[in-house]
Image (cartoon, rainbow, N blue to C red; front, top):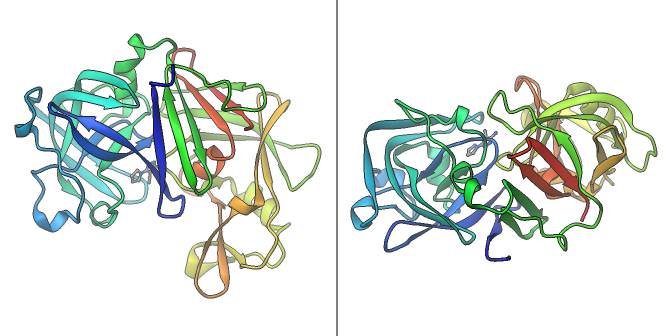
Length: 330
Ligand SMILES: N#Cc1c(N)n[nH]c1N1CCCC1
C-alpha cells in the first residue's frame, strides 16, 4: 500500500533530509526533518520573533479548527550539536506520507537557536526515537510514530535515503522492491530512548573478513556523518593515503584527489554487512584542497552514531513492535 510513504528530499548536500508534513485543518504544509535520534515533533510557529525566522513556514494554531492548546505544557530541546528550541504545545491533526494522527502533540516553537534560523531548508523536526526522551513537561508525549503504530499493518517504519537523490520513509510496511538482499535484524536496546544496537565488527576496503570489535551505537537519521570509536577511525584512515587529523577542521581530512576506501560494518553475527561506498566517505571540500571525511570520531558522545552516511548505504527497518533494527543492501 504505497499510500503510507513519504518522499524524503535531500537538503544541503546530503546534510539532512526533509519530508512534507501537513498539520491542522485546513492543512498547513511544512518541510520537517525526520529524526530517529530525538523524540519531539516541533515546528516553527507564529509565536517566534521575526528575528528568529528566515523564510521558514510558520504553524499558526489559531488558523486550525482542530488545534487544542495543551494548557500548562512546555517543551525544551537541546541537541548534541549545541542547537536548541523550545515553546508551548498544541494537539492537532498531523499527516505524513498518507498516515494521519489526530490529536498529535505538536510542539510550537517560541524560541529557536541561530542554527535553525539559518537552516532555511527546514521548518522543524519529527522525532522518531522513543517517548522516554521526549522533552514535554509536565508529562512526556508520544512520538508521531508511537501514536500511529496501533493503526498500521506492522509496528515499523523504514528509511530508504539515497545519495544526492530523494529517498523515502514508509510507515507500517516493508517495500520488498526497495531492497536487494535479505534483511538482517539486530536487537535494539531502547533503554536510553534511542535506536541503540551493536555491530559485531567492521572491514576496510575490500577486506574479506571483519575486525571483530563491538561497535555500540544509535541509528540516527538526524546526524549526517558516521561517528565511530577512535580505534576503528584510526584503522580506517591508516588506509587513506595522506589522511591526517586536522586541528583547524576538528577531524580527519585528506587531499580531495585521494581514493577513499569503502567501509563495511557487520550486522548480527557478521553474516551480513553494510558497505558504505568510499564515494560517500569523501564528505565535503574544506576549500583548501583538503576534504573532510565522512567517518569521524565518536569521542565524548558515549556511543557511536550510524548517521545518514551509513543509512543511505542501506534499506533500514526500524521495528518498534519487536525492538529490532533491520539492515539490507539495495
Ligand atoms: N546534534 C544532533 C542531533 C542528533 N544527534 N540527532 N539529531 C540532531 N539534531 C536534529 C536537529 C539539530 C541536531
